[in-house]
Image (cartoon, rainbow, N blue to C red; front, side):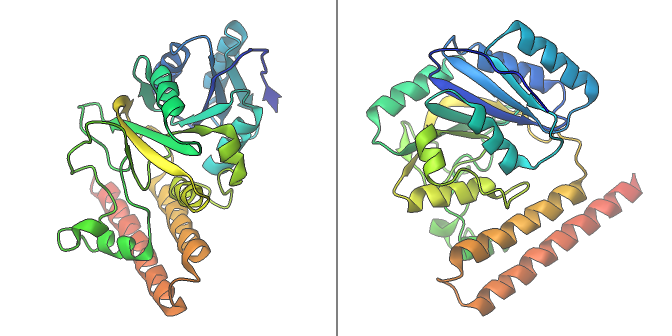
Length: 296
């Protein structure tokens, strides 16, 4: 294990980024973070990149004390890696940012301006755009419940518009507004608030941990906001992880989420039926993926 630690003071915002075989966009994402200003540091957790990438990151960290590299653990999972990055962070505020997400100029300054006028215990999400400038799913969404999960899985949003999970097809708000849940690709909150709810649940290896954090934050009395004027180019899909690996951990995440958070509100039989639906969905997706690979 090697941790590059600098003596930066003061640090207003610590950006926590977890990288696993991210690809060329990683350099662009790092540049955009460090361009935010001298009071921003980047805590980059190497979750198992190729040797040449790690060596390049170590070399860069030596030339810029605001880049703090945590490496040597291997792939410890997204939640645990985020918590690891947050533990070495020096800033009073944390911004969890995906390694394939490129911040717009002045994004951190805008976050701090919003924070100064919002109530205590606030979390802020940004507008995530793909490379074509289209809004991505996840940056505006409802809290995930067994009911919204069924509606989303069965594509019944047109019947139950108020129970839709994702809001990306709705008009973008003209100003910052409360929102039930945001994406883990961009989450800004005070460090104290993050640890008050225990950080990310490390029982999630990959996927669903952001929805769980939003739920715990809300249940603890916090308020989540969506800032439409803070934009992030989110490339997405850059990791080389096999689709079956991703689907396995996504499935485990959903099963954990519903039983952890809704066992007292929903009958056990209903949750078991939901488990079956989740497992069937995963099986179908894996099977389709294998068929597609064979046809190539």
